[in-house]
Image 1 (cartoon, helix red, strand yellow):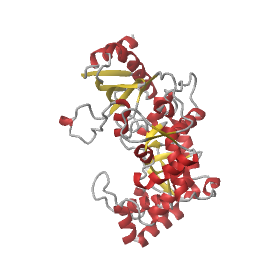
Image 2: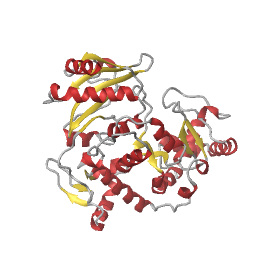
Image 3: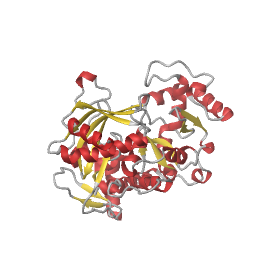
Image 4: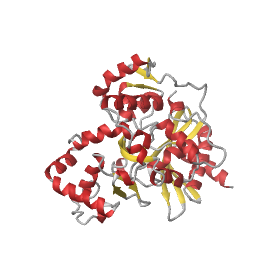
Length: 390
């Protein structure tokens, strides 16, 4: 049920992938999480590859940044959402404007309101701007989140809904007035009251998860469990959710009444660690018995699996994990390590895995695949990759 809800029971398109296919996946998952890590490819491109196979990445970019079909906002972290969801997140914008957001941003906006308003006026006057293009960007206080004053003001204005954001090819964010970014008919739609919006987001989460605990449903759009428990009872009473029990789960569950349970799933897909199938690590362990932790910020000597590890879905199981890097200068997809889960047969896993790696390499414009020697799947995978290359 979970895999079908996420689109992994659907067949990949046989021909060219276009905007219709991308919209279908977005209808399944509801949003794409954005992350800055680019060791392989930006994370929001990967969920579409996992479900559709090779697709033109500019299809997603046109939908998001030219046609106004998607917009960026904080939902499950920073995300791309269909514009139809804009009225459903305005309550979050209102809460951010009232100071209920990241404490550092709220404090900055409260202490320097005149500066924040000057940044808004500058964007209104000059058009879409990056933080570095501001007249007074301010000095950064350090790498990563050491933002200057200008960036802090832009981010607060974005969270408060007073600015919208798009991306340049370099991934740098450009901030502009919402009316210059979002479709007029979307902005004209009535704002959904907070309670009704929260309920609608829970229903959408249930459609995307198939079956889930209260914590799962809340986490999908980063709502607090305590705030949504009473709403879940209302949704059950209304028939929008069905109560469920899952063997082995300690917590009560809820199901999408329209969820389907296919007789089998025949997926073979590398999955981003930021994919909505696995981004909730506790749920991933409950569903698949698969312990997934990001080791990007773990010192290299202490990593168990690798820097940027993608689980490999085969059928209805996560059977392995692959540490990948795109060597763009060398034109190679580097497989630093390939580990199999307990009970995974290398002879069964490595053929489909090699095929998906070949598909990914072609999609990324990389001519070769280089398999390292770390991990128990590595020898068999190297042979499977060589066999495909002959």
